[in-house]
Image (cartoon, rainbow, N blue to C red):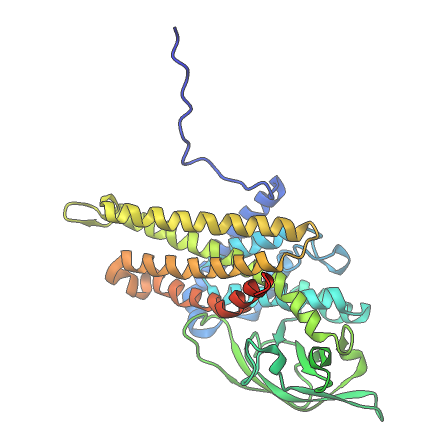
Length: 396
């Protein structure tokens, strides 16, 4: 009697989730090569100087800024998964600040222009942004209004004599704010109308009264510029309104869902990158006569991290499948964003601890990842806001 052949586990087998095709995998390889060859060699320098505008132009030339945008505006016409691939692979450049600046361009400022903009606005701002010839930013947060978007005080008052709007107010923590050509600006046009009193505007950053006050210093994401902006009697024509007057709150809340899921994908990919680097270190670094990875306490630590990463990744992919197929799963997007951001911070902290003193040093890049990833629990909706969204979705 012959012994049946036993299938052995293939831990080194290449994994591919069902949402991705061969084309997605080819795109993944292209973006990773770009990140390794054209971003990573400059990552340390850009921590001191911020990334140059030329890297945005370069990404535009390569077609990387419009992967999921329509061909008629210069995009590649791909699906939402192609945007996930960019978020996952750009992390191999090891410049969180650049990844953040690119995400603002492609997944925060572009979507509302594409969804709600006029044809003229799309030709003026969207098409050149996809080409890397214009840089975009998004203005939501204010000194007194962060997570509470309803507390925004920036006012836009209609002047019927000229059919212009006069804008006054300030915005803070604005990524790309010092380099942007235009800002997607959230304002109040009717303070008495509650959530129906918000309006979005496309405001060119070279208009009189737009003041880039100062670059803000941050814990991490040093490669990106973060601005404090002021708007003093800035006049824009009625044609600068993005979408419908009074519908700005709903427009921007819609935009945040895709942004949060992209952020979750980037968080998981960053956690994976730090995990992989630390695993290599644990296999090479010896203590007490053997590699530190051979100690049970370390082996279990890696097992815990790997499990967390895999669970977070699969939630992101499943939710992305629903989003791509026309659903609007706000609860699950909030869960995915909350979980992925937390896991990334936990993994980075564990990896820094495994490196010991070396992890605290700049040369290994672990401390930079630790600093950069901490923003993910704050930006695009804090942990507390995500918990509130999730909790309210259950009617409590």
